[in-house]
Image 1 (tube, rainbow, N blue to C red):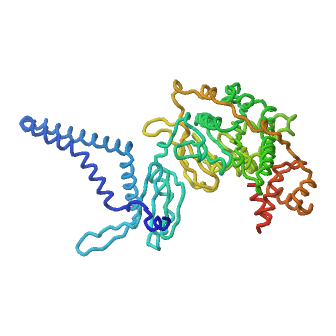
Image 2: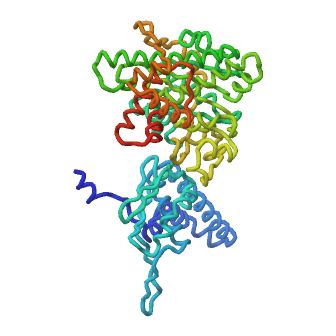
Image 3: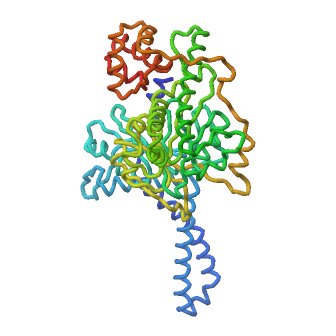
Length: 529
């Protein structure tokens, strides 16, 4: 079957002069009813028209104007509403790009006009993507084809999602008509692929853990966060920090979120530390279950049927500012930031995830240790170009991030970009707020069942170790243990005076990697991630 697909791999329909001809045929077909009507009316009114030349001239001009405008209207309507005509338009745009950039061969013909032949360029399109495939094979336009991705991104006013290199060909994948995949806020759910944010966008928090949400005032960030909350509350335990006391305090008394929404400085600090401690307890729970199942290696939380937990921090820079202003709580603030770092570095396997929301991101708003380990990023509304670069990284440094206020003449909210760290960012539309008469987040959350962690069902003891106890548990010479510890600290890992169960697991992971022949640095990197 695999060989069959390789032999008959469909690259799309080849671009050629027929695409220009087809557009002309469509225009003629649309004009035809008006031409027939013109002929019929002319036949009926011919005596009157011939007797009054001014009326004849006005009649012809009026009919030409009405026919042209009506044809243009129907033509545009077809291209806006119907996928088939959008595809034809995209083929025409690609042909025009090839023609105006002189990407074609001139074939000389005796006593005739030179013939134009286009190279092998294919277009394949489905509901959400455009794939342009170009043949290389050492041809005249090979260098142009290897660098055409950005130009076509502008041509289609789309987002380059990736490039596929295969023998003799290069393919560019673009997002198209992204807004068609927008869903309602009430329909956000966790499914097999992850948290569904659009019909074709899923936050796979297991493989791309933690989420950074950025959005300026009025950009739709609050609606996006509440939509995310609507999906997660049915599936997971959610804790919330709202330092500005603006968007989530009203939810604090709901049974599903009671005692889980905090906004005072000390409460916010304690919430982060408590979330980290719960993560440690989760690791202890998992190790206990691992022994019961006689497993050689510790699995992730899903293997033990444990529910994930999410910590949502809205307006993260405000939280940091509030913690730094209270000098009496400097030590606690440092502990909270250290705890947050541990959550982001080690939470994935235990099913503990962070969602950090902010406005325009500055380089010093989010410590690099945190930002570099938040794998999924979303922006909504208008941000500065610098903020886009900070959020989406070097891979999108040369990307042109567009701010679009209207689509088809209508104001649009919640438009932005979505990307996984290290990959191209793509256009994104956050879930749409339903009619307030039909849906209310507050009313919806009021009906949801409260989910809890498993700790009340099991007698779990959180074990801590001294350095000597941990080295004994790992069956390591103390000097070798100190070597591992030093390498971890060089990589940015921080340890308390005592070591936790999750620290034990991290050391075990590094030791296993080292046994497989990897260097200390490689082993430490894999253990942390």
